[in-house]
Length: 277
Image (cartoon, rainbow, N blue to C red; front, side):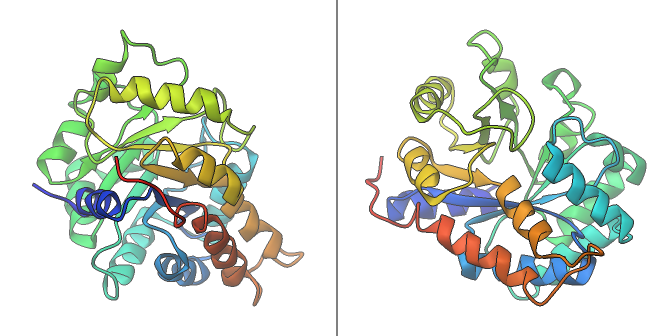
């Protein structure tokens, strides 16, 4: 089964460029503003959209994304509202891939079978669940694949050649390479090390590789894109939301534009000339 993610990466390959993957938290700073941002992302230059599922204990997230999740939860964001936002987005856009990213607990509470059915029905294309290792594939990964959703796995600087086959076994859509060890948004990635790591992953899989964590400028996007199929930006966009809020943490007239302007700037890093592989 070919998914929107598969089609998007095939299109990017035919265009001879890498893609820009944007991450923002569902419901941040409120459901209405978050939906306005979501709808504006493709035109701004996002090729794939990751939406964070807010959770109270996000162990891999840095301060910026943790704060975004807490803002969303405070404003009343739920999994039902997150899926409703995807459904609303799909009314106007049936091609941009959407990946839900987060932790297993909210999915488990929702009910795995019901979640997969509702996510697929809403127009979700893939899942990244950071706290479910390959050893737990029967819990969510295999049912998700059976439902027609891509299950995207993280590889890190500490994922060695012995571990990689297990990580990649049931991965589909793309592989998300975490470019630095540690939490999101903590440091800038070393481009040379990233390219070497992506090359190593590619010896084990034909899937596209997207690189994220610590990317915050168009130059970084361009440099990393030279050796990967996509570049993921999250903390920088979440920070743009935070900086646009008023002193009570509420959205302002600048909020949507703050994000879309940054996405447009970052997208320039992948929309220059890049030879097809």
